[in-house]
Length: 341
Image 1: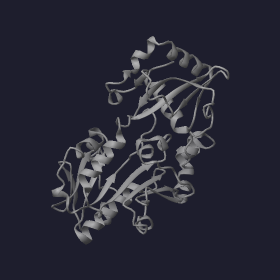
Image 2: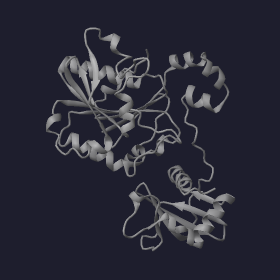
Image 3: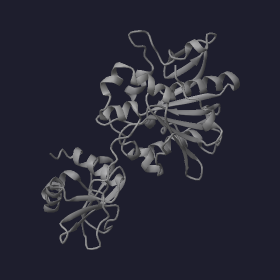
Image 4: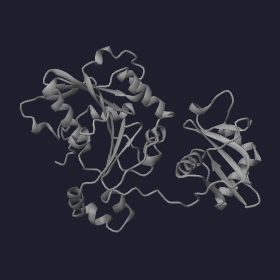
């Protein structure tokens, strides 16, 4: 069994640790080992967080073969009985872990019962394309969840575990905290050394995968780059361009708490989407209900405006440009949400 050794990142003594790596590198296994050893040595407990109730249901049930949350690690601790019950994790007869949804934990205002909690694990954070969705305004939800647990404490470590999937750099976590990926198995620090991001590789695991059936089937394909070689595929510079000085503001839309301005340059025949916008414009449109405020209109009302039709026509013609990758990613999501063909 491959597992990630947390000793390296622990030596940095950083409270929030974001671990990105290929499947099979052992992120979750290493996290389990860490919290078990912490309880065994010090009696410290942990909190396990997932985004959706269905994800927690999967954690707390046995599959048809009898496997559960602790199956992969149980043999390493033959003298300890592990079990899961009622959204709690048991070490023999003692509760040593608690599981919650993101939105559930932020509503539990009192953290008086968590004084012995020293670790927070957010597992499987990144979402693959077309598999569920991030929560509206998820960055704020995460901060509220952390605040509910941390309060004024500084003795808790947070581990956020995720696979290297397309679009993860545009996830609410990365966008909200201004994070970026380090490559070549390196580490980067952010937010005054309070957040550590590591992009992990496992050469031994990769060689094993290359010799499996799926490794042979995917050889030479984009899937090999993603699943075997741990490369993120969606970063290209197509349609990335700063808006021109002669562009004129048209309208703006709000998505995931971010405001994006649409600017027309009729001389160049281009439309630019930028983080710059006219704050006094009456033409502000919310993409989701979470973004809707008294000063905005819902995106569905855009259909009656000619500037929206003009934007879509130019998008289909390849005349729409985005000032950076982040804006491009969100615009593509918005267009998909609006079911534009």
